[in-house]
Image (tube, rainbow, N blue to C red; front, side, top):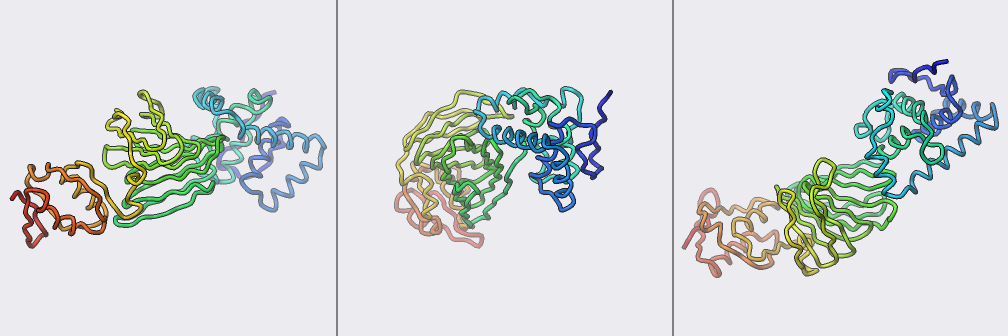
Length: 354
């Protein structure tokens, strides 16, 4: 006899017992319980459990398998993820793509996942590939953080990881059952990552992936330039594109830094502890930096009123540590160290060749 297809996403009646195996019923109830049962569903679940002692045993066994998923080694999880979605290979429908699913889908969405979740009981001695793929791909926590120009933010993530966002920084956070991921869309941030060997922490800043277990490091992503500096612990920096490594990576230890442009890593360099993310102390540090680049860094924090129109002036080099909020004081010191003059005007102050 052919098993009926799972209900469509438009249906909201939750009755996993009809025509489905005991393992499938248990998986459906477990998924629905995780999403949150309403009063009627809680009563229905109790009725189901009371119908047969085997129901309770199946639910307990499925819950143990669920917990076992969290303990899978990273290489096992990667293999499952790379292998693709078994339900799609068999022509089955399992609702929205995993990456498009919200943290708490609608009830019908949970029903649809639960009813097809255990159609193939192959992995972990009973958990189907469909359930495992969807279970690992569904975020447990999502958040977006953004600081405005001139603003800095400090946030603490659910695992205790602390993140300090510099000015004009955008950060997307997604935690899963097997990993923690952050995407730095722009700006720079300092990460103090809570140690959790079972859940690696990765920062994606095109074109790099930075992966750690627990450490303190900074990532800068301004335009096409990305730079990583390590203050404590170890991080692996890997050129990354479209979900895949595209070149050899490097392992950074405390006091080391690496930069990348267009997926190409520069040589690893040494960095002093007080030069890592100095913006946390309200300072910018320039080491033989073009003057035009230095002014652009000041401008990230607010309008400076300073302008350079001559390319030869923009190319002049500056070195030193300066207060982020004192761009005007920085400019007044320039004529003492560079062949330039300051010319006030209606639109601000022009820095010109002397």
